[in-house]
Structures are given as structure tokens and as C-alpha cells.
Length: 254
Image 1 (tube, rainbow, N blue to C red):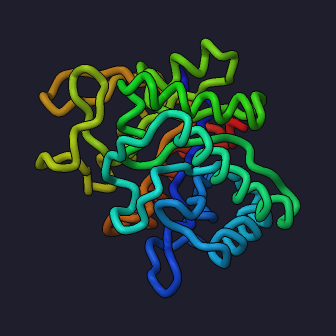
Image 2 (image 1 turned 180 degrees about the vertical axis):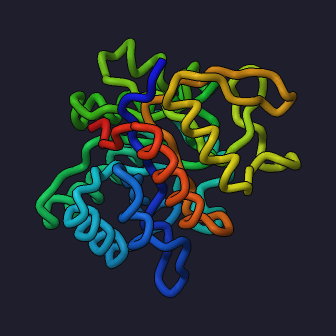
């Protein structure tokens, strides 16, 4: 199957005050969709406004990167929050980002959970349903981005939302298609050439190699390039170049 159309997304706006993470401006020249932190796990009003303005100027789609209320843990710790409270937390975050997107002349175009919340709602039915409820109540036309086979995407589809499957450019996968835990060695890939080749294979509908060395078919509609790993911008640029050289059209899904 020849390569077709692909979205490239990345997590942006994840600094806080004097603390910075990643190079938002450089990544906005690479990606087609920006998952912008909404203030709960990272991001503050000054950062949110700046990223939204620069994303709008670059023609990059803005997505709400929602997470647990956990600044200290960067949203990477599971929080056993009650489902109703989680729904309100997600609504709060999307609404905050929407304000800055509107001022920048654009809008929030999709929702993607972050970190521990992203991982939890792969299997945590109650929390997955709570996040789905927030999107349905806010704007059921918003697509949602997530891991194929997750409770999150299944419940979202059942609720009538548009679901978008994503894969990660620089993460290792189990034979079952789950992400290898960051606590395990080899969970994050660092060879830019290998990462780029994997992304071209994904876009072409071809298998990549799982952590055990077997073939794994992912078939994403969007590929996430991380902005907080060493050499992230260079890797993202190499991924973009490899995809365009392979004839892949890069464009937002939303």
C-alpha cells in the first residue's frame, strides 16, 4: 500500500513559569497538530497564549492536552480521582485552552489525554467514560486522539465521537500493541534513522518491529513525535523529511 496522508502531533506548551521544556517554536515548524498543555500538568496562561498564537500563525491545529491535576508529577502519576470530578477537570482544561485559541483567531480542534491519564484510560473504564462525557458535553464534534484498542477510543466511538488512532514515533511497542513502560529499558527509541524508517512504514501500512523482534501493524492516522527527549527537534525534522520524501502528505486530521 503506498503512503497517503498523515498527521504529525507533538506535546507543546509544557513549561511553567521560569521552567521550560522542549522547543515549542521549532516543533511548530515541523508538526501539523499541537497537543497544548492546559495548566493542570504543565503550562501557564502566558505560555498557553504564546503557543496558541504561534500555532495559529503556523497553521498548526490546536488540541487540548488534558491530564490529571498534578503539576509536581508532570501528570505522569495515576490519580484515583472520582469520575464526575474528572469530567469537570477535563471541561475546565478544554475551556481554558479554548479562550487562548479564540484570542489567537482559531479554536480547539481535538482532545488528547496526557501522560498517566492517557495510559490509565486504555483500560480504566470509569475514567475513560468520564473523559468521554466531558468531550460530549463540551462539543461532540471534537475528534479524540488515543491508543488503538483502548477503552477511551471504544467508549468515544460508542458515544458518537470521531476517534483518531495514533502511534508514537520514538516508543517501543509490545507484541499486543501496547506501549512498553518507560520504566523498562529500551522503552524510548533514540536512533533518528530508525525512528524515521518506522514512521514511513506506519504511513505505508507496513508493520514495524515490536520489542520482541516480531512484526506489528499499527496503521495510525496520526504519529506523535515527542518534544521532551534528547535531540527531539532533530528527530522530528528527520521524521518529517522521511515522510515527505516517501510521498506522504502531511496535514492535520482535524
